[in-house]
Image 1 (cartoon, helix red, strand yellow):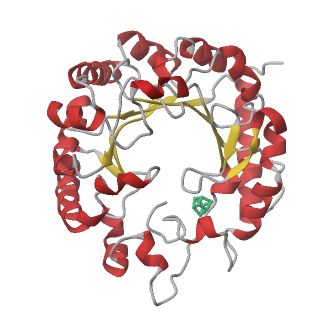
Image 2: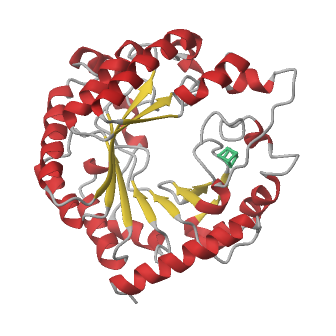
Length: 360
Ligand code: SF4
């Protein structure tokens, strides 16, 4: 049965309140459901970013789209979630059934906040209008370069012009609309190849009409990524980041960072030098901060595998086999809730930027 919009809003509100209480009391088994669920829509992509998994033509068969029929069972339980992230490891708009999935969610879970993350190359006027008509959404566009030449280097494609035209168009339509986009951000994974463009990226974001820029560190998903990591360039990144902050303040844009180089991370950098790894080796014990991720979020990948958070990659079950409730109150979630804020957190959490207070 589909709840109407007012009833859906009430159910979400009650779930949020209950979740707050259960988080305060650090309950292990939750009556409240996750506040945010990331559901996958496929893994194919039209770019070949140097910090991503192998996207060479030989690997094309390893990636696939999720059809609507496959998606529907995974959506069960979204009645209470405040937000659904409708994207996964790939470009969602490449999936020919993405529109049908989007319509299914908006029709069956009215009022739910939808988060879309795209690389922007297929984000055309029709999609601008569709999202703006739904109104209750947030958008992130993964751009990762401020110029065409760096974009080519980082993404392996020459689609900078198309992406930029799409984002300028969206910025214009957003300004002309009655609102509804809770956040329009552009993101930038910092690697050696693009770090010199950190300040210019803020200018580009302003040109696109974005309100937020998210800088991120590269995920070390491949041992060979050491050569592109900006990790050894911390001092330079901090200087560039300071300039980016000034430009952002002038443009009225907010900046977020998962980097160990950000404004609020200077202290951590000075103390630990290289961020999390160095912190783990620090002589003095580091005062660990609380983490509430296991009470709030669930991430699901295309085969139904559920994981705790993007930082741990800890598998918590399989949505297809165990269902949302089974995963949410399964052994792994309960174990992490019991231990994450104890004096003896799980190994995957001990050096996490959240626990170290380097990231939120
Ligand atoms: S401490 Fe870090 S790794 Fe552990 S649950 Fe929280 S965000 Fe995930």
